[in-house]
Length: 125
Image (cartoon, rainbow, N blue to C red; front, side, top):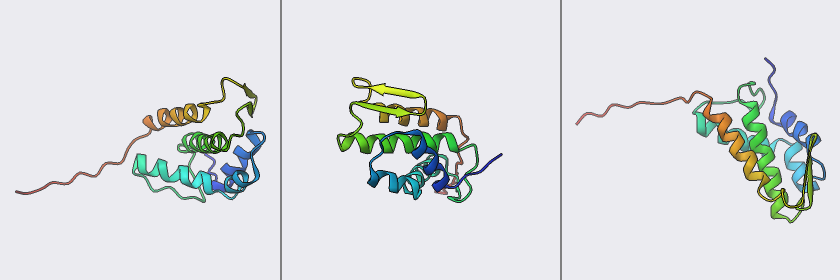
């Protein structure tokens, strides 16, 4: 099982999405955006995940949450509203709006399949 760091995941996503603005791409390549996604996955699962060695179990959710953040920032800046290319998928005007939310929903569907750590407390009255 291969582990990746947040910066490796950021570079992977950077190579998947065309026309990422410089400010967003720096946050992506430096691992900041994937790290924010990792924190969201940690909060959802209750697990502690290393930014230097993310297990394969969590990678799909972190990747999709990061893609959602990148596309959301591009949409907010008015960029990518005509077309976006993600790997082999090309999205043209009319389909781009809301694409970031689609990736977020996909990530949360993936998270639903992961086990959650639960803490149980007993109170005495």
